[in-house]
Image (tube, rainbow, N blue to C red):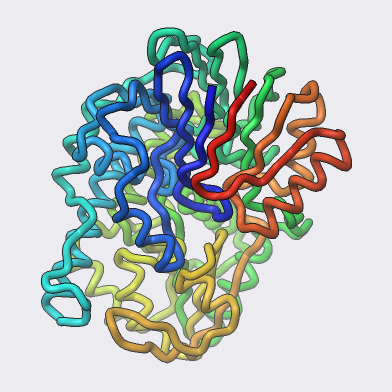
Length: 451
């Protein structure tokens, strides 16, 4: 049995793990690289394994850095099934076509404005490619055993993080493996806690926050403080938010704060068709989270939905205090770019980040203090306040990961992935020092033999 790290090794993006066992090939996760240009360029390089040679794909969850390469995999010859939970499938049906649409849109815009070095600029894949891959999705309920291919058993265990997110447990060749996926936090206001891990021979564990602890502050109070001080100076709050997970949590807190009278009753606009569709899934999958269908409806009704492009453009002519939540969360694309262009030059406004910002993204640059960022081929001066709520992360921090693993018997080997180098190495060291485990942080492309 061999395991090859085709992504999320030495970086926090592009999750892809190739498992070869008994003549079969399985891919756990199928994500796009995001962030630094040298990482994004890897999306254009051919995989070291031919897609047609794969027997199965299993997704931990629907975030683009875990699922966004799937349209290209199918386009390039993969003809098998993609196993995931119903919640993950429902989100992929939203996220993947949107990903293709945004890439088409960005390429068309670059061609119109002439700022791309490529003639013509092309998308990695388009919306139709994404739609075409959706028929491969095979829905499996949490905790049900299934056979993705001959000689391999698997089950998907709840991981928190976002709707439908799972850890992947595999049995093959007399051995057990667990891929943590992205682990959520305990006591999340909407999602259930991650299920405890089973005993396994090999563990692949994420380390996004492997060198950090979440602050003890109350995210609702931090959010209230930003909204109040921005409204007091007549400004608006622009929140670049991840369409899945973070947007719904923000709406929940804003709903609560308005109910309590803790913030001014300023209008809230959700300007992301993808985030709107993802929010509506809260009602459809009420049994998968802590909110009832009625509560989910009330939370979603906190915002005015902005679906049409013309209505999105019209928001930029408004001058009174308001809150705009718009994707993408790291300002890598989407409608938030145009709101940023319209609002970043006003010091009365606030750009509020509510999630992890991968290195090389515009969001990371702004949080690091950049006073200008490159947008659509030109540099944009930023005078607005830049703020961040650090305690809204949907990832467990290092203590949360250790707590999750604390009852697990020692595996033969733990592989620490899905983290920047410092974070992965910090968690690797903690696993060794606290549990005495053999743990390594693999490099991109590394292939290991599982004895």
